[in-house]
Length: 474
Image (cartoon, rainbow, N blue to C red; front, side, top):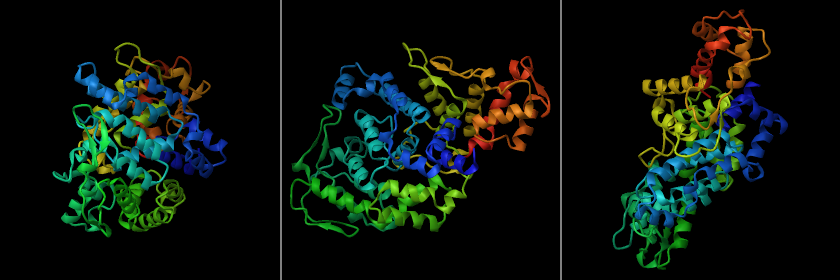
Protein backbone atom coordinates (compact mmCIF):
# COMPACT_ATOMS: atom_id res chain seq x y z
CA UNK A 1 0.00 0.00 0.00
CA UNK A 2 1.37 3.44 -0.91
CA UNK A 3 2.36 5.65 2.02
CA UNK A 4 -0.12 8.41 1.08
CA UNK A 5 -2.94 5.87 0.87
CA UNK A 6 -1.98 4.33 4.20
CA UNK A 7 -1.84 7.77 5.82
CA UNK A 8 -5.29 8.79 4.56
CA UNK A 9 -6.85 5.53 5.71
CA UNK A 10 -5.14 5.58 9.10
CA UNK A 11 -6.50 9.05 9.87
CA UNK A 12 -9.95 8.88 8.28
CA UNK A 13 -10.70 5.33 9.43
CA UNK A 14 -9.85 3.31 12.53
CA UNK A 15 -6.92 1.72 10.67
CA UNK A 16 -5.69 1.03 7.19
CA UNK A 17 -6.40 -2.58 6.24
CA UNK A 18 -5.86 -4.52 3.00
CA UNK A 19 -9.64 -4.62 2.49
CA UNK A 20 -9.91 -0.86 2.92
CA UNK A 21 -7.02 -0.39 0.51
CA UNK A 22 -8.86 -2.44 -2.09
CA UNK A 23 -11.98 -0.35 -1.57
CA UNK A 24 -9.95 2.81 -2.11
CA UNK A 25 -8.47 1.43 -5.32
CA UNK A 26 -11.92 0.40 -6.59
CA UNK A 27 -13.08 4.01 -6.18
CA UNK A 28 -10.13 5.34 -8.14
CA UNK A 29 -7.99 6.91 -5.42
CA UNK A 30 -8.06 8.61 -2.04
CA UNK A 31 -10.12 11.67 -2.98
CA UNK A 32 -12.86 9.56 -4.56
CA UNK A 33 -12.84 7.10 -1.66
CA UNK A 34 -13.26 9.98 0.78
CA UNK A 35 -16.07 11.43 -1.32
CA UNK A 36 -17.82 8.05 -1.28
CA UNK A 37 -17.40 7.84 2.51
CA UNK A 38 -18.90 11.30 2.92
CA UNK A 39 -22.19 9.81 1.69
CA UNK A 40 -22.65 7.10 4.35
CA UNK A 41 -26.26 6.35 3.49
CA UNK A 42 -25.06 5.04 0.11
CA UNK A 43 -22.77 2.48 1.80
CA UNK A 44 -24.15 -0.91 2.73
CA UNK A 45 -23.41 -1.37 6.43
CA UNK A 46 -25.65 -4.33 7.15
CA UNK A 47 -23.04 -6.26 9.13
CA UNK A 48 -22.24 -3.55 11.66
CA UNK A 49 -25.81 -2.26 11.69
CA UNK A 50 -27.18 -5.73 12.34
CA UNK A 51 -25.04 -6.07 15.44
CA UNK A 52 -27.33 -3.62 17.22
CA UNK A 53 -29.90 -6.43 17.47
CA UNK A 54 -27.43 -8.27 19.70
CA UNK A 55 -28.32 -5.73 22.38
CA UNK A 56 -32.14 -5.55 22.46
CA UNK A 57 -32.26 -3.05 25.34
CA UNK A 58 -30.88 -0.39 22.98
CA UNK A 59 -34.25 -0.39 21.17
CA UNK A 60 -36.29 0.48 24.28
CA UNK A 61 -37.69 4.03 24.41
CA UNK A 62 -36.32 6.39 27.09
CA UNK A 63 -39.63 6.61 28.98
CA UNK A 64 -40.01 2.82 28.90
CA UNK A 65 -36.47 2.45 30.20
CA UNK A 66 -37.35 4.69 33.12
CA UNK A 67 -40.40 2.60 33.92
CA UNK A 68 -38.47 -0.68 33.72
CA UNK A 69 -35.75 0.69 35.95
CA UNK A 70 -38.32 1.89 38.49
CA UNK A 71 -39.87 -1.58 38.60
CA UNK A 72 -36.50 -3.26 39.03
CA UNK A 73 -36.53 -4.92 35.60
CA UNK A 74 -33.68 -2.96 34.01
CA UNK A 75 -30.22 -1.94 35.19
CA UNK A 76 -29.03 1.37 33.67
CA UNK A 77 -25.39 0.30 33.94
CA UNK A 78 -26.09 -2.73 31.75
CA UNK A 79 -27.79 -0.59 29.09
CA UNK A 80 -24.90 1.89 29.02
CA UNK A 81 -22.44 -1.00 28.77
CA UNK A 82 -24.41 -2.32 25.80
CA UNK A 83 -24.09 1.07 24.10
CA UNK A 84 -20.32 1.04 24.65
CA UNK A 85 -20.06 -2.55 23.38
CA UNK A 86 -22.00 -1.78 20.22
CA UNK A 87 -19.87 1.33 19.72
CA UNK A 88 -16.68 -0.75 19.74
CA UNK A 89 -18.19 -3.26 17.33
CA UNK A 90 -19.27 -0.48 14.95
CA UNK A 91 -15.78 0.99 14.96
CA UNK A 92 -14.27 -2.39 14.10
CA UNK A 93 -16.73 -3.61 11.50
CA UNK A 94 -18.51 -0.61 9.99
CA UNK A 95 -17.87 0.07 6.32
CA UNK A 96 -18.82 3.69 7.03
CA UNK A 97 -15.48 4.40 8.62
CA UNK A 98 -15.40 8.17 8.12
CA UNK A 99 -18.82 8.51 9.71
CA UNK A 100 -17.67 6.45 12.70
CA UNK A 101 -14.49 8.51 13.11
CA UNK A 102 -16.45 11.75 12.94
CA UNK A 103 -19.16 10.48 15.29
CA UNK A 104 -16.40 9.89 17.82
CA UNK A 105 -14.96 13.35 17.14
CA UNK A 106 -18.25 15.18 17.67
CA UNK A 107 -19.13 12.99 20.65
CA UNK A 108 -16.04 14.43 22.32
CA UNK A 109 -16.79 18.05 21.40
CA UNK A 110 -20.42 17.67 22.52
CA UNK A 111 -19.61 15.18 25.24
CA UNK A 112 -22.08 13.46 27.55
CA UNK A 113 -20.53 11.06 30.03
CA UNK A 114 -21.82 7.50 30.02
CA UNK A 115 -22.80 5.97 32.32
CA UNK A 116 -24.61 8.98 33.80
CA UNK A 117 -27.37 8.62 36.33
CA UNK A 118 -28.93 11.86 35.04
CA UNK A 119 -28.84 11.28 31.28
CA UNK A 120 -28.82 7.51 30.82
CA UNK A 121 -32.36 6.92 29.38
CA UNK A 122 -31.63 9.33 26.51
CA UNK A 123 -27.96 8.54 25.93
CA UNK A 124 -28.69 6.01 23.17
CA UNK A 125 -30.85 8.38 21.13
CA UNK A 126 -28.24 11.10 21.66
CA UNK A 127 -25.63 8.83 20.10
CA UNK A 128 -27.97 8.31 17.14
CA UNK A 129 -28.41 12.08 16.82
CA UNK A 130 -24.67 12.76 16.72
CA UNK A 131 -24.15 10.05 14.10
CA UNK A 132 -26.97 11.41 11.93
CA UNK A 133 -25.38 14.87 11.87
CA UNK A 134 -21.69 13.85 11.95
CA UNK A 135 -21.17 14.59 8.24
CA UNK A 136 -23.79 17.30 7.82
CA UNK A 137 -23.71 20.89 9.08
CA UNK A 138 -22.40 21.92 12.47
CA UNK A 139 -25.19 24.45 13.02
CA UNK A 140 -27.83 21.73 12.62
CA UNK A 141 -25.93 19.32 14.84
CA UNK A 142 -25.41 21.93 17.54
CA UNK A 143 -29.13 22.64 17.76
CA UNK A 144 -30.00 18.94 17.82
CA UNK A 145 -27.42 18.22 20.52
CA UNK A 146 -28.03 21.16 22.84
CA UNK A 147 -31.81 20.73 22.81
CA UNK A 148 -31.60 16.96 23.16
CA UNK A 149 -33.03 15.65 26.46
CA UNK A 150 -29.77 13.84 27.20
CA UNK A 151 -27.81 17.10 27.15
CA UNK A 152 -30.50 18.85 29.15
CA UNK A 153 -30.35 16.18 31.83
CA UNK A 154 -26.55 15.88 31.84
CA UNK A 155 -25.86 19.62 32.24
CA UNK A 156 -28.96 20.41 34.30
CA UNK A 157 -30.87 22.47 31.74
CA UNK A 158 -33.81 20.06 32.06
CA UNK A 159 -34.58 21.61 35.46
CA UNK A 160 -33.56 25.19 34.65
CA UNK A 161 -36.43 27.71 34.83
CA UNK A 162 -36.91 31.47 34.79
CA UNK A 163 -37.54 31.32 38.54
CA UNK A 164 -34.57 29.06 39.26
CA UNK A 165 -32.08 29.21 36.37
CA UNK A 166 -29.19 26.76 36.20
CA UNK A 167 -26.12 28.11 34.39
CA UNK A 168 -24.40 24.79 33.70
CA UNK A 169 -25.43 24.21 30.08
CA UNK A 170 -25.42 27.91 29.24
CA UNK A 171 -21.80 28.12 30.39
CA UNK A 172 -20.53 24.87 28.82
CA UNK A 173 -22.25 25.74 25.54
CA UNK A 174 -19.93 28.75 25.33
CA UNK A 175 -16.81 27.31 26.92
CA UNK A 176 -16.76 23.80 25.44
CA UNK A 177 -19.25 23.44 22.60
CA UNK A 178 -18.72 26.64 20.61
CA UNK A 179 -16.65 29.82 21.03
CA UNK A 180 -14.37 28.86 23.93
CA UNK A 181 -13.06 30.96 26.81
CA UNK A 182 -10.88 33.15 24.60
CA UNK A 183 -14.00 34.65 23.02
CA UNK A 184 -14.17 36.92 26.07
CA UNK A 185 -17.76 36.46 27.24
CA UNK A 186 -18.72 37.83 30.65
CA UNK A 187 -20.54 36.27 33.61
CA UNK A 188 -23.60 38.34 32.72
CA UNK A 189 -23.51 36.79 29.25
CA UNK A 190 -23.33 33.32 30.80
CA UNK A 191 -26.52 34.18 32.69
CA UNK A 192 -28.15 35.36 29.44
CA UNK A 193 -27.07 32.12 27.77
CA UNK A 194 -28.76 30.16 30.53
CA UNK A 195 -31.91 32.30 30.31
CA UNK A 196 -32.17 31.64 26.56
CA UNK A 197 -32.15 27.88 27.15
CA UNK A 198 -34.88 27.83 29.81
CA UNK A 199 -38.07 25.96 28.94
CA UNK A 200 -36.54 22.70 27.72
CA UNK A 201 -37.77 20.28 30.37
CA UNK A 202 -37.39 16.59 31.25
CA UNK A 203 -39.31 14.92 34.08
CA UNK A 204 -36.11 13.44 35.48
CA UNK A 205 -36.23 10.35 37.71
CA UNK A 206 -40.00 10.09 37.29
CA UNK A 207 -41.65 9.61 33.89
CA UNK A 208 -38.56 10.89 31.99
CA UNK A 209 -40.89 12.61 29.52
CA UNK A 210 -39.33 15.48 27.58
CA UNK A 211 -41.30 18.63 26.77
CA UNK A 212 -41.02 22.35 26.21
CA UNK A 213 -42.66 24.45 28.92
CA UNK A 214 -43.27 28.11 27.99
CA UNK A 215 -44.13 28.89 31.64
CA UNK A 216 -40.55 27.98 32.57
CA UNK A 217 -38.94 30.15 29.89
CA UNK A 218 -37.35 33.42 30.95
CA UNK A 219 -38.87 36.47 29.24
CA UNK A 220 -36.78 39.61 28.90
CA UNK A 221 -33.84 41.04 26.99
CA UNK A 222 -30.89 38.69 26.45
CA UNK A 223 -27.45 39.48 25.03
CA UNK A 224 -24.44 37.23 24.40
CA UNK A 225 -21.36 38.14 22.32
CA UNK A 226 -23.28 40.40 19.94
CA UNK A 227 -26.43 38.27 19.85
CA UNK A 228 -29.28 40.31 21.30
CA UNK A 229 -33.06 39.89 21.35
CA UNK A 230 -35.95 41.42 23.28
CA UNK A 231 -37.20 37.89 24.04
CA UNK A 232 -40.80 38.86 24.71
CA UNK A 233 -42.46 35.55 23.75
CA UNK A 234 -43.02 32.82 26.38
CA UNK A 235 -42.22 30.19 23.76
CA UNK A 236 -38.46 30.54 23.37
CA UNK A 237 -37.81 27.69 20.95
CA UNK A 238 -37.14 30.00 17.99
CA UNK A 239 -34.93 32.12 20.24
CA UNK A 240 -32.92 29.00 21.07
CA UNK A 241 -32.58 28.13 17.39
CA UNK A 242 -31.47 31.66 16.48
CA UNK A 243 -28.97 31.77 19.34
CA UNK A 244 -27.39 28.41 18.54
CA UNK A 245 -27.21 29.31 14.85
CA UNK A 246 -25.41 32.51 15.80
CA UNK A 247 -22.89 30.66 17.98
CA UNK A 248 -22.31 27.97 15.34
CA UNK A 249 -21.38 30.66 12.79
CA UNK A 250 -19.29 32.77 15.18
CA UNK A 251 -15.65 33.20 14.05
CA UNK A 252 -14.41 31.96 17.43
CA UNK A 253 -16.40 28.75 16.98
CA UNK A 254 -14.94 28.26 13.51
CA UNK A 255 -11.44 28.60 14.90
CA UNK A 256 -12.13 26.30 17.83
CA UNK A 257 -13.66 23.57 15.65
CA UNK A 258 -10.76 23.92 13.22
CA UNK A 259 -8.24 23.54 16.04
CA UNK A 260 -9.98 20.41 17.29
CA UNK A 261 -10.07 18.93 13.78
CA UNK A 262 -6.42 19.74 13.12
CA UNK A 263 -5.44 18.23 16.47
CA UNK A 264 -7.37 15.05 15.71
CA UNK A 265 -6.26 14.58 12.11
CA UNK A 266 -2.87 16.32 11.79
CA UNK A 267 -0.82 17.03 14.91
CA UNK A 268 -0.99 17.51 18.66
CA UNK A 269 0.27 21.05 18.01
CA UNK A 270 -1.11 22.15 14.61
CA UNK A 271 0.17 25.34 13.05
CA UNK A 272 -1.78 28.57 13.14
CA UNK A 273 -1.92 28.46 9.34
CA UNK A 274 -3.73 25.15 9.06
CA UNK A 275 -6.16 26.18 11.81
CA UNK A 276 -6.87 29.46 10.01
CA UNK A 277 -7.24 27.70 6.67
CA UNK A 278 -9.74 25.19 8.02
CA UNK A 279 -11.63 27.84 9.98
CA UNK A 280 -12.01 29.82 6.77
CA UNK A 281 -13.49 26.87 4.90
CA UNK A 282 -15.79 26.09 7.84
CA UNK A 283 -17.13 29.67 7.90
CA UNK A 284 -17.41 30.20 4.15
CA UNK A 285 -19.24 26.90 3.70
CA UNK A 286 -21.84 27.74 6.34
CA UNK A 287 -20.42 25.19 8.85
CA UNK A 288 -20.46 22.39 6.27
CA UNK A 289 -18.54 19.46 7.73
CA UNK A 290 -17.96 17.69 4.42
CA UNK A 291 -16.40 20.78 2.86
CA UNK A 292 -14.13 21.21 5.87
CA UNK A 293 -12.98 17.59 5.77
CA UNK A 294 -12.24 17.80 2.05
CA UNK A 295 -10.03 20.82 2.69
CA UNK A 296 -8.33 19.06 5.58
CA UNK A 297 -7.54 15.94 3.54
CA UNK A 298 -5.80 17.89 0.78
CA UNK A 299 -3.99 20.36 3.03
CA UNK A 300 -0.16 20.16 2.75
CA UNK A 301 0.19 19.85 6.52
CA UNK A 302 -2.11 16.84 6.59
CA UNK A 303 -0.24 15.20 3.73
CA UNK A 304 3.06 15.67 5.61
CA UNK A 305 1.84 14.45 9.01
CA UNK A 306 2.02 10.65 8.67
CA UNK A 307 3.09 8.85 11.84
CA UNK A 308 2.83 11.92 14.07
CA UNK A 309 -0.24 10.92 16.05
CA UNK A 310 -0.31 8.37 18.85
CA UNK A 311 -3.39 6.18 18.81
CA UNK A 312 -5.58 6.59 21.85
CA UNK A 313 -6.28 3.37 23.81
CA UNK A 314 -9.64 2.73 22.14
CA UNK A 315 -8.19 3.54 18.71
CA UNK A 316 -5.42 1.05 19.46
CA UNK A 317 -7.90 -1.60 20.60
CA UNK A 318 -10.09 -1.16 17.52
CA UNK A 319 -7.11 -1.00 15.14
CA UNK A 320 -5.70 -4.18 16.67
CA UNK A 321 -8.92 -6.12 16.18
CA UNK A 322 -9.22 -4.82 12.61
CA UNK A 323 -5.58 -5.66 11.85
CA UNK A 324 -5.75 -9.26 13.03
CA UNK A 325 -9.09 -9.89 11.34
CA UNK A 326 -11.15 -11.19 14.25
CA UNK A 327 -14.69 -12.30 13.41
CA UNK A 328 -17.31 -11.60 16.07
CA UNK A 329 -20.39 -13.76 16.51
CA UNK A 330 -23.66 -13.01 18.24
CA UNK A 331 -23.31 -13.76 21.95
CA UNK A 332 -25.48 -16.43 23.51
CA UNK A 333 -26.70 -16.54 27.09
CA UNK A 334 -24.78 -14.71 29.78
CA UNK A 335 -21.35 -15.96 28.75
CA UNK A 336 -18.55 -13.44 28.38
CA UNK A 337 -18.88 -12.48 24.73
CA UNK A 338 -16.40 -10.77 22.46
CA UNK A 339 -17.91 -7.28 22.79
CA UNK A 340 -17.98 -7.47 26.58
CA UNK A 341 -14.37 -8.62 26.61
CA UNK A 342 -13.49 -5.64 24.40
CA UNK A 343 -15.21 -3.34 26.87
CA UNK A 344 -13.20 -4.79 29.76
CA UNK A 345 -10.00 -4.43 27.76
CA UNK A 346 -10.75 -0.81 26.88
CA UNK A 347 -11.36 -0.10 30.56
CA UNK A 348 -8.08 -1.77 31.49
CA UNK A 349 -6.31 0.42 28.91
CA UNK A 350 -7.84 3.52 30.50
CA UNK A 351 -10.40 4.64 27.91
CA UNK A 352 -13.82 3.04 27.92
CA UNK A 353 -16.13 4.62 25.30
CA UNK A 354 -17.95 7.73 26.60
CA UNK A 355 -16.60 7.25 30.15
CA UNK A 356 -14.64 10.53 30.43
CA UNK A 357 -16.13 12.04 33.58
CA UNK A 358 -15.81 15.74 32.68
CA UNK A 359 -17.94 17.49 30.05
CA UNK A 360 -14.89 18.45 27.95
CA UNK A 361 -14.51 15.00 26.34
CA UNK A 362 -11.47 12.77 25.96
CA UNK A 363 -8.14 14.50 25.20
CA UNK A 364 -6.69 13.83 21.77
CA UNK A 365 -2.98 14.37 22.38
CA UNK A 366 -0.16 11.89 23.04
CA UNK A 367 0.75 13.26 26.47
CA UNK A 368 -2.62 12.09 27.79
CA UNK A 369 -2.13 8.52 26.55
CA UNK A 370 1.58 7.76 26.90
CA UNK A 371 1.76 6.71 30.53
CA UNK A 372 3.43 3.47 31.58
CA UNK A 373 0.06 2.00 32.62
CA UNK A 374 -1.48 2.76 29.21
CA UNK A 375 1.47 1.25 27.32
CA UNK A 376 1.43 -1.86 29.48
CA UNK A 377 -2.33 -2.13 29.00
CA UNK A 378 -1.94 -1.96 25.23
CA UNK A 379 0.85 -4.52 25.23
CA UNK A 380 -1.33 -6.92 27.26
CA UNK A 381 -4.16 -6.53 24.73
CA UNK A 382 -1.71 -7.13 21.87
CA UNK A 383 -0.33 -10.21 23.63
CA UNK A 384 -3.81 -11.67 24.18
CA UNK A 385 -4.83 -11.00 20.57
CA UNK A 386 -1.60 -12.28 19.03
CA UNK A 387 -1.98 -15.64 20.71
CA UNK A 388 -5.78 -15.80 20.29
CA UNK A 389 -5.87 -16.29 24.05
CA UNK A 390 -8.52 -13.72 24.94
CA UNK A 391 -11.39 -13.30 24.39
CA UNK A 392 -12.39 -16.92 23.89
CA UNK A 393 -16.13 -16.92 23.22
CA UNK A 394 -18.24 -15.61 20.31
CA UNK A 395 -15.15 -14.83 18.24
CA UNK A 396 -12.90 -16.43 15.65
CA UNK A 397 -9.22 -15.55 15.22
CA UNK A 398 -7.11 -16.37 12.18
CA UNK A 399 -5.11 -19.55 12.57
CA UNK A 400 -1.34 -19.43 12.32
CA UNK A 401 -1.50 -21.15 8.92
CA UNK A 402 -3.92 -18.49 7.66
CA UNK A 403 -1.30 -15.87 8.44
CA UNK A 404 1.40 -17.56 6.39
CA UNK A 405 2.47 -16.90 2.80
CA UNK A 406 3.28 -19.92 0.64
CA UNK A 407 5.87 -22.00 2.51
CA UNK A 408 8.72 -22.60 2.63
CA UNK A 409 9.79 -18.98 2.80
CA UNK A 410 12.45 -16.94 4.55
CA UNK A 411 11.59 -15.42 7.92
CA UNK A 412 11.94 -11.85 6.64
CA UNK A 413 9.51 -12.68 3.81
CA UNK A 414 7.02 -14.16 6.29
CA UNK A 415 7.30 -11.04 8.45
CA UNK A 416 6.79 -8.81 5.41
CA UNK A 417 3.66 -10.78 4.53
CA UNK A 418 2.27 -10.40 8.05
CA UNK A 419 3.16 -6.70 8.22
CA UNK A 420 1.29 -6.00 4.99
CA UNK A 421 -1.83 -7.30 6.74
CA UNK A 422 -1.25 -5.62 10.09
CA UNK A 423 0.39 -2.26 9.31
CA UNK A 424 -0.24 -2.17 5.52
CA UNK A 425 3.47 -1.97 4.67
CA UNK A 426 6.57 -4.19 4.53
CA UNK A 427 8.46 -4.63 7.80
CA UNK A 428 10.79 -1.72 8.64
CA UNK A 429 14.36 -2.81 9.37
CA UNK A 430 14.09 -2.03 13.07
CA UNK A 431 10.92 -4.09 13.35
CA UNK A 432 12.63 -7.01 11.61
CA UNK A 433 15.46 -6.79 14.14
CA UNK A 434 12.97 -6.70 17.02
CA UNK A 435 11.07 -9.73 15.72
CA UNK A 436 14.32 -11.66 15.25
CA UNK A 437 15.21 -10.89 18.86
CA UNK A 438 11.74 -11.84 20.10
CA UNK A 439 11.63 -15.19 18.28
CA UNK A 440 15.32 -16.13 18.08
CA UNK A 441 14.92 -16.64 14.31
CA UNK A 442 17.41 -15.21 11.81
CA UNK A 443 16.15 -13.09 8.87
CA UNK A 444 17.24 -15.61 6.21
CA UNK A 445 16.09 -18.71 8.11
CA UNK A 446 13.75 -20.91 6.09
CA UNK A 447 10.26 -21.36 7.54
CA UNK A 448 8.44 -24.60 6.75
CA UNK A 449 5.28 -26.26 8.04
CA UNK A 450 7.01 -27.90 11.02
CA UNK A 451 9.09 -24.88 12.01
CA UNK A 452 8.84 -23.58 15.61
CA UNK A 453 7.44 -20.30 14.25
CA UNK A 454 4.25 -22.18 13.38
CA UNK A 455 4.16 -24.38 16.45
CA UNK A 456 4.71 -21.83 19.22
CA UNK A 457 6.73 -18.76 18.22
CA UNK A 458 4.27 -16.96 15.96
CA UNK A 459 2.50 -15.05 18.79
CA UNK A 460 5.87 -13.59 19.81
CA UNK A 461 6.35 -12.21 16.33
CA UNK A 462 2.79 -10.88 15.95
CA UNK A 463 2.61 -9.09 19.27
CA UNK A 464 6.01 -7.52 18.57
CA UNK A 465 4.52 -6.05 15.39
CA UNK A 466 1.47 -4.83 17.34
CA UNK A 467 3.68 -3.35 20.08
CA UNK A 468 5.72 -1.36 17.56
CA UNK A 469 5.36 2.36 16.75
CA UNK A 470 4.30 1.29 13.25
CA UNK A 471 1.01 0.06 14.76
CA UNK A 472 0.62 2.33 17.80
CA UNK A 473 0.97 5.54 15.80
CA UNK A 474 -0.97 6.69 12.77
